[in-house]
Image 1 (spheres, helix red, strand yellow):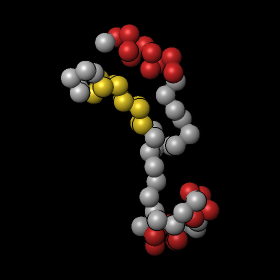
Image 2: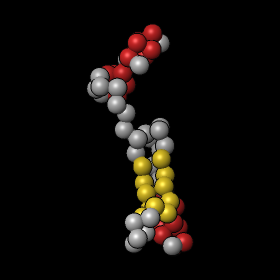
Image 3: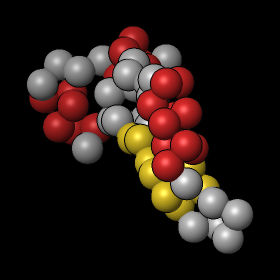
Image 4: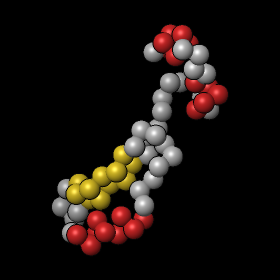
Length: 62
C-alpha cells in the first residue's frame, strides 16, 4: 500500500506520526457478565468517540 499512498501524495508519517502503515481504530464494547458483546461502537475515523450518554443507555438496556 505504500506505493499507492506515495502515488497519491499521502505523507503517512506526517498524518499519523509514524511510518509503519498501521492505523489505530478506537472502539467501545459493552460485554455482559457471560462475556457476550452486547453493543459496539467502531469508527475508522479516529476522532469520533461514543457519547457517554449512549454507553449509559446501553447499560440500562441490559
